[in-house]
Image (cartoon, rainbow, N blue to C red; front, side, top):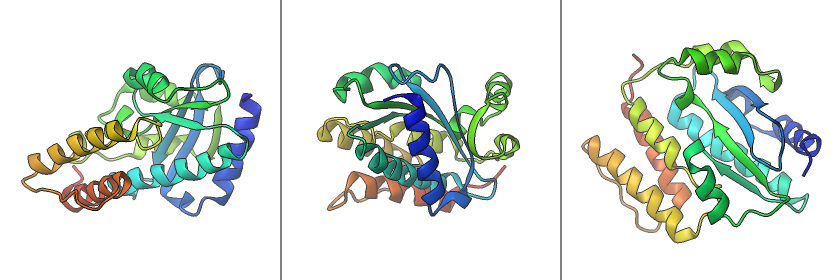
Amino acid sequence: MKFEEFEHILKDTISSFEEINKIGFIGVFGSLNLDRDLDFLIIPSAEIKKGEFSKVICQFLEKLEKNIIKRKSRLIAFNYSLFQEEAEYLSKRKKNDVFLHVCSYPDIVPPNEKVIDAYLKIDKYYFGTKENILKIPATNKDYDYFMLFMANCLYSHYPKKLEADKIKNKISKIFKYNNSKIDFKNKSNKQIYFECCDFLDSIAVIQ
């Protein structure tokens, strides 16, 4: 897929996304060469809690994937550059697949001046304003939010057993470290992920 085609799909997805008011900024950067990977930045609006926004990211990626599938392609998303090679291998990536590196609040909080400066220079953006990058608050549960974000392989096309093991392992630790537990029975991986998002939002305090 050429970048111009993906750009058209992205704009269509944004224009029809019902939760768009919960997003503060959407942009892409890097080489813009879809034969490699595409760096995709999506950050929350200032008033949205990070768990709720993690759910919004999932909902947006689902809608984006549905639109990409219509073009006989797949979306393969990964949330951390160190996962790039394993995501490419485990997903059995094909030439026309969209290989998306999702960047978000873990890259910005706590403040990383070099990263923030680079994001503020993005010239390919499609929603929101760059100033929203500076408005993401820190919380007392950011380590757990970051672990949750990195555990999200729901859109990486991993083997289902690996996807379940990775999500359940990280989420069980998040609950344990916060003196609680989660019942995994009769729940999809997405339901488990969303339950952890809500749990962290219920105990997180802005600092």
